Image (cartoon, rainbow, N blue to C red; front, top):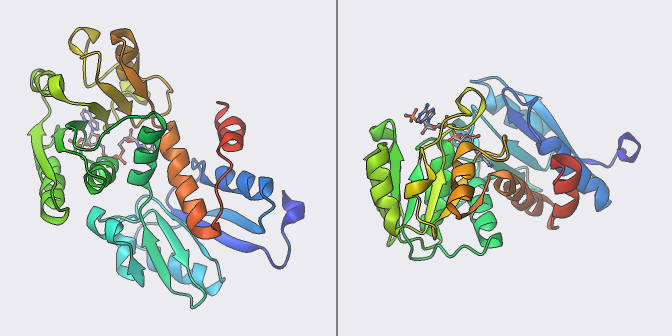
Length: 287
Ligand code: NAP
């Protein structure tokens, strides 16, 4: 790859802390190479409190954009020249584009990535009841994007009720026609509410690492067979929740295509080209 970088190569940068586990540099650089695009994508560790300097550095180096990750996704908005209407309502930015006048525009492609992966699975969500468990950054992006795109009722269950309440209030206030409600996480109530829902989404970190043996639902018995189950986690590829969904005979997906699509949408914002998804899936994720 080094041989293709010349004096004219355009820089894109990931700003976050830490960035070393990110798959974004691989995803984008493999795609630039496959499409013979003269760009390079680098990850830069920018510590909390230093995002303004990170943005100034990208401007100074005439970079054309990049991604923003934890812990800067909200704070960065103060320093941008413009923010897409969707990202403004979601309240966080994960993608930036720097135009020819060195103005920086922010976008959020996380929720869109999730919607694209639902569409790939031919899941109809317009006007339907959707149950989300979790109320962190990912839940907020996914719930808001589903509301933008015409979901029916959105229920947000969370261990900490106040975080779910803030997301539901924000959606109801800012997205016309939306109906969002917050509930405290409780399995009996969750099982009741999913009986007439089209989609169940796990947007908590339950199912990862030390909580690998845990799930928002404990058995396949009460999972309606016609509900689509989505877990935002992609490592492990099959969480306990997805195993339960498989055993119940439900259709389901993990978070892999969400992460790939959020990157693919950003790639299109910078280059105007479609990311070669098959190459990315195979080369980076072995799928
Ligand atoms: P976050 O902002 O830290 O939020 C974490 C959420 O998980 C909160 O709702 C938290 O509840 C809940 N939670 C954590 N531990 C829990 C437990 N033991 N029991 C019940 N709830 C628990 O994280 P995030 O960025 O939203 O990420 C959430 C998940 O989505 C992670 O698994 C992450 O890997 C995944 N994700 C996937 C993608 C993708 O592209 N596929 C993108 C982003 C995130 P409290 O509010 O009560 O603390």
